Amino acid sequence: MAELKALLFDVDGTLADTEEIHRQSFNKAFLEAGHDWHWSQDDYRELLKVTGGKERIQHFLQQQYPEFSVPGDLWDYIAGLHKRKTAHYVEQLQGGRIPLRPGVKRLIEAARAENYRLAVATTTTMENITALLESNLGPDAMQWFDAVAAGDMVAKKKPAPDIYLLAMEQLQLAPEDCIAFEDSYNGVQAARAAQLVTIVTASEYTRDDDFSGAALILDQMGEPDAPARALYGTLAPDDYLSMPVVREVFARAAECA
Ligand code: XBP
Ligand code: MG
Image (cartoon, rainbow, N blue to C red):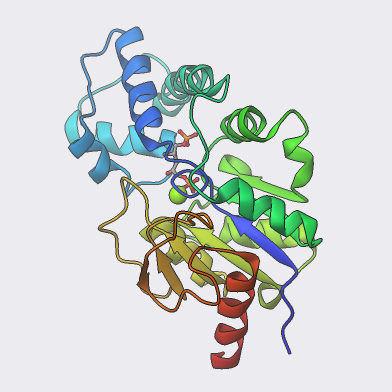
C-alpha cells in the first residue's frame, strides 16, 4: 500500500496570493525601462496562461509588439527587464507584507511535526521563494524544505511535469510517495503529468480555471475556526485542510489508482 512521505507545494497562488504583486512588479519594471506597456488585471489573467515571467514578457511582445527589437539579443533584454521585476517583487515581500494564505503555515508546521518531508515545485524565481518563505516563516524557513525546484532549473516550465520530476528526484522519492498542492490549471496539468495526487486551493487569479484531475478542490486550506469550502471532492474528517484530510485524500486516490 502506498505511504505518504512528502508534500510538494506550488508557490504563487498556493502558498500566498502573490500574482497581484507580480503584476505590479512587471509594470514597474516596464515603466522604469521607459516603456508604456501596462498589464491590467484582465490582461494579466490572460497572460498567466503563459508560465514564467520571462516567457510571459516574450509572449506579450510577440502578441502586441511583434516589431519590437533591441540592438542586442531580445531574450537577453527580456532577462534584464525580468531581473528588475524580481527586484521590485522581492522588495514588496520583505517584512512579511504579503501573508501566506489561510492554513498554509499551520499545514506546513503540522507536516513537519509528523516528520513528512517538504518540497517546493514552482515556476517562479528562487529569490522570490526565499523572500516569501523567510519573511513569513522565519530566517531558517528554506531549511524546512528538502527540495526546492524552481524557475529555470528545468527547460520546460509548467504545464510540463519537469519541475515536479526534479523535486522528486531531489527527494529521491516516487510519485506514489508524494502529494502536490496547486492553485492553477497549468499547475494541476504539471502535477498530474508527473503522476501526483493533487489538492487544489483556488486563488484570486485562478478561481475560474479548469482543475480536472485534482482529487480535492478547495476555496482555501482554512483553519480550525475558519472552515474551507470543498468545490469538488470530500473534505473529511476535518472541515479544513489538516494532515488527517491530506492522508484521507491520498489513501482514497491510491485505492482508485
Ligand atoms: C506562477 C507563475 C510565475 C509567476 C512569476 O508560478 O507563472 O511565473 O507569475 O514568476 P507557480 P517569475 O504558481 O508555479 O509558482 O516572474 O519569477 O517567473
Ligand atoms: Mg500557482
